[in-house]
Image 1 (cartoon, rainbow, N blue to C red):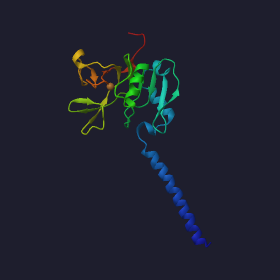
Image 2: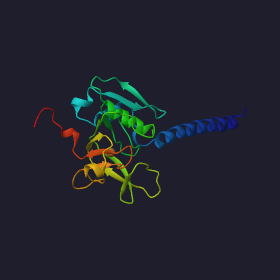
Image 3: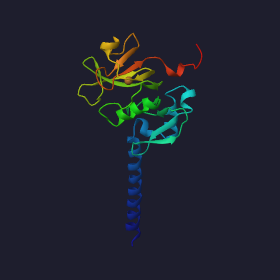
Image 4: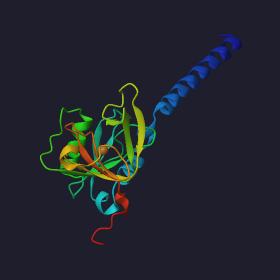
Length: 203
Ligand SMILES: [Cu+2]
């Protein structure tokens, strides 16, 4: 082989290795929000949803490379923390008790209605996201014309309260508590208090 041809071939080889490397890089860059985090970062984010006295003893589930949740730590207090619910650029972690986790998994698995038979509790100290259209909070972000709205830190009671029975508002406002998804099986109470400021056993 002539040296010139040889160096062209070598050059091509280097170029193709370089471009393969770049393809991997850009694939990494495509991952946004929670999927761009390492497992350790995901665990930290998941735990930030509740006060440490809850999340330190909770089961931790994080999405694997396929996006499916897997348990990375078994807890002892019945709570489960996940690092993200809405798949936005800013993660919205949640910690919930057994009934609350059942409710959240039903949402994730798109069940027709939640399967918890007692009220569940959920903490979202980092806030979250919801979508609004025509003055209503709606469940499907893909609804045409849906507007994304940030939720402040809050905690939740997963039980199908109705605005007609409770007289509670159906939209966030000055009362700082409202029924999200009012009139649907997934109706639940949203309470705008920061759970990270919850002091156990103190007034
Ligand atoms: Cu909610």
